[in-house]
Length: 251
Length: 251
Image (cartoon, rainbow over all chains, first blue to last red):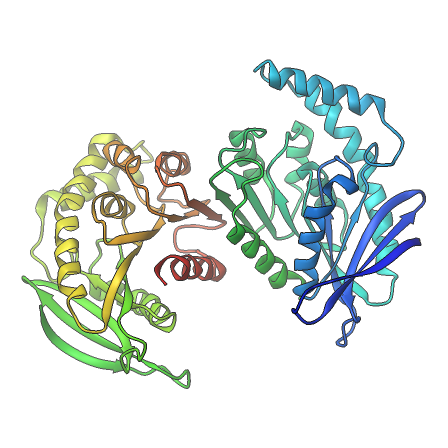
């Protein structure tokens, strides 16, 4: 793991600050946010920040907001570029699948399972091992301990991670994207506590499929928080609830 | 409004206490909980505590817990005996409808609309005017001001109250009982902020009907919090979320 740049975020009058480090790990860029100065009470838990495959640079403002909140709550936070996104090599098969999806949505046609599978499954298959390798590196840094929470982003990646990665002990998921049938089946094997956000009128999301996925999770503790509005209209208090969920399970 | 008894609840070491007053209003019993001593900062908002039609005496332990929490959060709380419940005159038509419902549920039969209508609509028609009259009396007491929140209980009563009573500015509802079609239609006229709790595996509740009711509400701010477990298994953190909802809207 190679730190490529480092700066301290100005946090106004609010006391402790945030150290932001950009890194590269096997050619994959990422960003790590930690308390500055490092927490006096020892290593802090880590929240892995999921995000849509639009590139870290484009997602930066929202990621940095979430990271500041996580650090203020006593955590470290990290985001890793997804395969085919940002400055990483283009991935033509995924781009084709995305174009197929866009055509179907714009034509008002139902999005069939093949398009969803072609778009999401290769991304999950490639991203999850990369994220697990990033966890190996991040958790070996001084100042970062376990346990790990996974928050937001493409929900299928969250499902797979929650199912296979034992260091992740709690996940806050955003039911805001298409989910392959195979991932719904994987959800039955998830047993960690889950906090699932659903935007009731999400234009890019099938509400029935989201409820079916929530039902499928095997977790004894799972909460669904549905709020009004579209994909980007998550109300501020929903963010507060999610933060309390992580505080409950990572501390 | 006639106070029939009054006592101070012991609150251990936690500072301010709770004054509990039993009252009767036109022959209808009720209980009022207020901060003791009265709030130094003036009248406090009121939360009307809904409850199933099982009698205030039987419901007392759970009501008193909710009331203590409301008072600790800076509110007054009140509960009013429902028609046909507790020490009020029996209501044979409702008892017959309840027996019909129980027979259908125990036989594993679908509960048809007629049974639900016969059980719920007369109760709503009679209880809602009584609760509004209780609000007139309660809000005229020193120490209690507006606005008013409605919390829990039979959801159909909450829907009607939210639709017709302008002093109620926020409602926390529990999707845990059968809802007549007519009430789903009334829900479209509700515009106040709503916080709806759903127990995902509620044995006495049809999940699909609960989601349909949530969808019907006309409110621009409505949140559905679904958690695992049966009717009485609401997790503690769901109570915390509901308390924060009222703090957001009544203060």
